[in-house]
Image 1: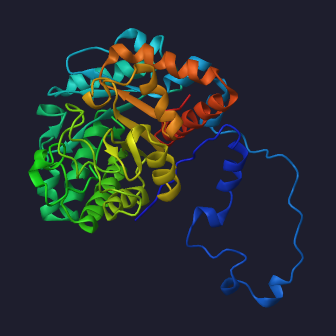
Image 2 (image 1 turned 90 degrees about the vertical axis):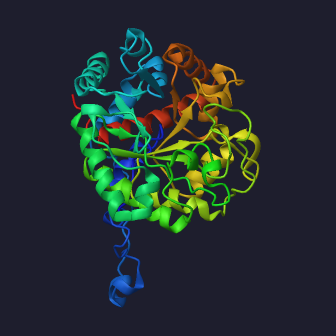
Image 3 (image 1 turned 60 degrees about the vertical axis):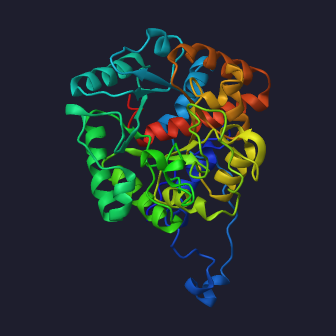
Length: 403
């Protein structure tokens, strides 16, 4: 499997990131390092060492690094909000012009390809020059296909694909990748990496009940997730693994219920995490956090707000250095009792990056909250820049920062 690391641009890490890119051993994890005794002759190991150079790096900053310094406080905050646009609607002008949203998500069912092309063009035209928007869509196959009609071909559900095996997954997700890239959509909110508890089956409403999971065996699901991630990448589309750390053991759908969304089993050493690890290793650029609650990680706290789930487990333990995005925080019942401003800032405090809202009318309030939070302290400001750096690095890898 291939891993495509995304540069996590911490505010003071630009020079370190540049030097890492020139290190051949960091580019190839299987390369023999100079200090490896199996790759160095005895007489070479005795050679005098050279003092590290104190000269500053002359390598010019990447476009992402340059933009991180150019953007104003509100532009930085806006990059961390992904806004849902319902089929048949236009993007509210203030979403991009005043709030500088980092991208859009196509909601509901879009059946006319020309309409999809028009909304993508609208998002690009409304965004700052040289800073293209992320455009995302739920396109998993089966019942969860937001592009239909002449906008995209039909693909089987994950359950059907899982029964056929990774080869069928590759074929279907190649088709999905071709359809999305053909419309200029660079982010698939797929694949679902959740492993369905076999004791629940269809009673697991968010995944099993909608045939969204590849199966109940973690190793098999892991192979399917890796196949889907790589197939999308081969067509220029970035995969989003969801819903970390897994929705396969809850009964209710967090979009519609605040009850029945507690998973008492999943912990840091759970085999159900293997499918997410496989997707990360395969190069997924984003991971979506669940809004369910996992007491073995952090009691009473939705995963998207939990530092134990995001920073400790996903980033530190599984090594994910890409963009962490929330599940919907705009209309989802699971977080309806959380003040809107906290829905924007608690993911940042947990180690996440982007908030996704299905309610476009909340965009300004979300951006306001992030901007004000960042202004409270230098620590918050640097934390904001860290997340924006990840978003800009992802956009640069997708060719969205061309001047």
